[in-house]
Image (cartoon, rainbow, N blue to C red):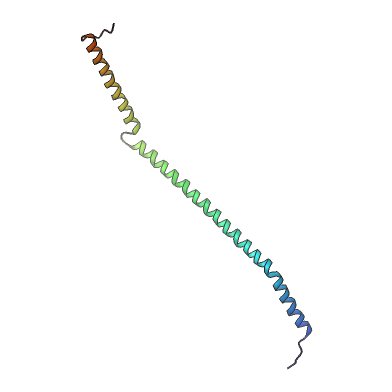
Amino acid sequence: MADKVNEQTTDSVNTVTVTTLGIAPAQAMATLYQTSSAAAAMALQNAVHAQNNQYALANAVMVEAVNLLLSSPRSAAVQASEKVENALTKFAEKIAAINTANNGGGTDTK
């Protein structure tokens, strides 16, 4: 077995080692940047997906609320208007009763 290694082989091994050690920091940073950008892109995709789901849910709730308002036998607006009308009728009856009491039973308000 020979005790001496060919100089070209030694030079080639040294060149590969130096090149590998020289490229390692740049390759590590490139891998870091690629991984970070992929994670940021996935986070943005998740945010858009969540916003889309929230929009669809809001639309479904609005449609159901309008459906309930339109399909209910008596909506809140009808009930409120009836309460106002009843209150005005009772008020008019009380005014008429006060006028009757002040006029001695007549309707003349001289």
